[in-house]
Length: 436
Length: 54
Image (cartoon, each protein chain N blue to C red):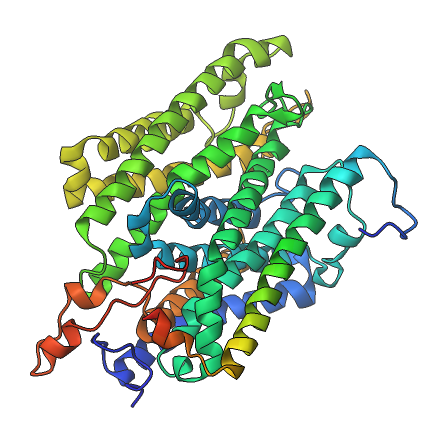
């Protein structure tokens, strides 16, 4: 029924199967919407946040999706600034994942602020001494950039392309995309960094306070570095997941291997820098404030030294090395294991730098308070995941996201040779003259 | 956000923060304006970006 909307030369499941899957994910999404409405109508008393967990599940999810969405800016940077042209085969998906991650982050913030109608205050009455103001500015601008990067991809639907204005707009936006991608990389550097900077400048929180380079604490650079390192891993993981669900090869192995290698080296170098930073904090920064680093991992049932070991060794060095060595990188099992470990690692890092930072007692009368999110918090955190799945489903069905899909999956019908000979659809972020 | 607001101060913080914000917004705005105007002109000239593109 919707075959006229499906890209030429590719095969999709039947409409009823697609709608059934949409309905299943949509049902979970409605649960999240219900919880969101509860939070908006009844207020933040629907959450289990308290004085020790003013930043809780939502802010962790926010920082985690922003780090995981870093694949979009870093892939764009590599393609346009460093000339890695092969990335054009995966950059559409990186942009889509980035768009989902950043729109999800804004949705979560819209729930978390409690008074979403006053969200514009941070722009209008900006506090220029706040790292979070920088985050708000860059996050919003970068989301606009991601939307601009997604628009030509959406306009690439074959029915929309029949309208001359939209066809011209798609072409012209492709041509100007390098400017937008470079702007996006600039914005990402600052907002990823400032999210880390928020923890690093808290001199009243010795668990996260770090030394500075000019006005930027080390955490500023580590956050940007980790987003550039683990973001591409997340793009690869979602690509792998999509291939498994659709039972199709969507991107050629050489492209996957190249992105995995870049991600591996970025993770390995990042985790060395993170280790140096941690050792300096252990033996210089914390003692200078009259504290022993082990103090922060005692007297509570959850936040032990295992977190540090897991983050740095199991979810840092291990995935980095697995992606660097050719044998493990090119083995699908070890590669996917490395991607999963990396994703867990960066999510764990954001949890530690946000929740553990604020929960660690700093006064003699303070105690370690534990936190279990309410179902409303959980449901509203799952909400953007369902939204992301739905957007991926619709985009994959109706848009030419994977330029190599036709070549890798020729349709086995009498028309197959004709379909296979069709030119590749151009990636959304391809400069003029470089399109297929 | 704007110089005529009561809380605006002409200091380094405002130059850097708001300067960068307005530069970025200008680049995005000019980029999109260019694309839209060029697309209107191309359409009026009978061009079809789809054909050139694929």
